Amino acid sequence: MTQHLTYKTYFEEYLKTAFQLEVDLRFWKHFLSTSIKNYQLENPENRWINEAGFSLYNLRPDGQNTWLHVSSNTSTIEIKDLEKHSDDFFIWVMNLSIVRVYNAAELFLLNVIQLKYFPNLKPIDNNKKNANKIITEIKNHLVTAGKSIDTTNNRYIIEFLKEQSSDFESFLDLKVNIDWTTTWNGFYEFFSILRNIITHHAMTITPDIRNNINSVAKDAFKHYFIQPSKTTDVDILKAKNEHEFLFFVSHVNDFVANAVKFIAAEIDFKFIGLYKA
Image (cartoon, rainbow, N blue to C red; front, top):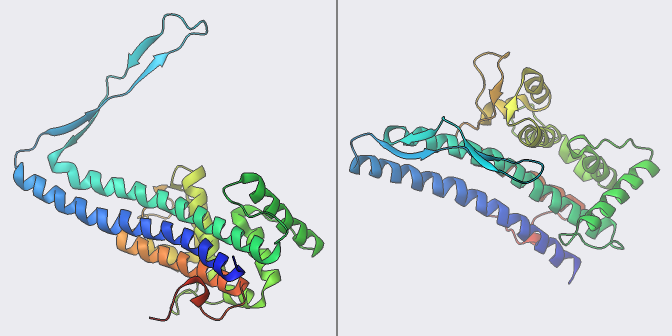
């Protein structure tokens, strides 16, 4: 397989994630909203339609006399609250989708870096050891170049690509939106912070985290995500709605595809199967 065909293959793997996000959010959000309205019309009298309990086993060190323990608390869903529960569910789906697309973007970049700069190494192919070898080579290159290795938010990957491509470095300084101050460099940092919030901070945004985000992508953050009534509040990360969230993801797609374009030293996206609309 030629190098260009391999780029396209890697991009198509990333594209599967992008398509799935579109289906999970735009289609299923609309479908569920319509289904709830129809269900409420067919069932005008409010009632419980679901109740969940909580239980666990008391395990003894000798493995004997194991008893089930249950909580007196339960969680219920009523017909009148279906829309609220649906909204809460999709907040959870959208937040987890950030992790999913982040992982897909990271894998795509590492695959392309191996293909372009370290062809002597094995492709990742779902092998953690192969991925680690690529990461080690990236870090070794930075050390040789006299650069510091900052693994926070995958900054070392960005630093490596800046070393390899002056066009990519210039791209990072461009504004994501002409009316914003957020650059592509700041956007990727913002994207990485969001992923960290979800995986390590239970989707919670503290004032310190909010200040960190605002320092790199304030306008992008305010455009796509709900802001607290007070800057001192601790809040859960929430996109404004699924439409705004998918616009946010479209910026991720732009970043990833353009990064690979500069790595491959191309001027457009024909090499990965995309053509001017």
